[in-house]
Image 1 (cartoon, rainbow, N blue to C red):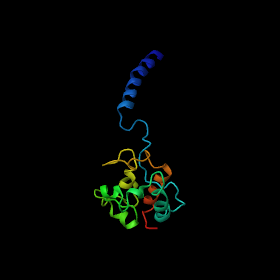
Image 2: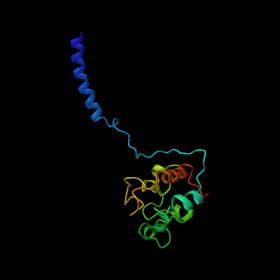
Image 3: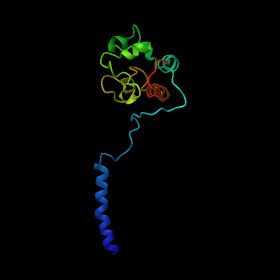
Image 4: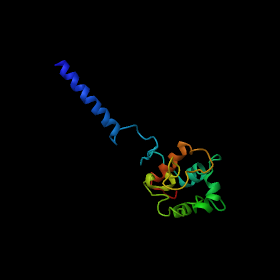
Length: 150
């Protein structure tokens, strides 16, 4: 019986290994996947204070330097991040999807901060590779919370 069982295992194990390699649901998790969760549900993110006064204005990745009046990002993309109403208008290619309230994964603002945006270059252009995770979390949380003008 042991010999028969051992032979059975030899036949099954390669088949299981092939399933692991070929199965689309198997494999390492994508660390850059988008999740619709609030990283700090007890804290409300303020557009005026946390985004305009913080995440979008950091000295090393100043999004507002490019995406406000006179900035190259505004000329190239049409995206003005200088006010809530301007942000909600979106850019040249993202009028309706720059911010999808409640859904950061469908929001171009979040997609452009990721590794592979759906179109164009990742942001910030000519800046550090990515915004700090804490800034991306603030932007994501603000969108999950409804993207309010607060």
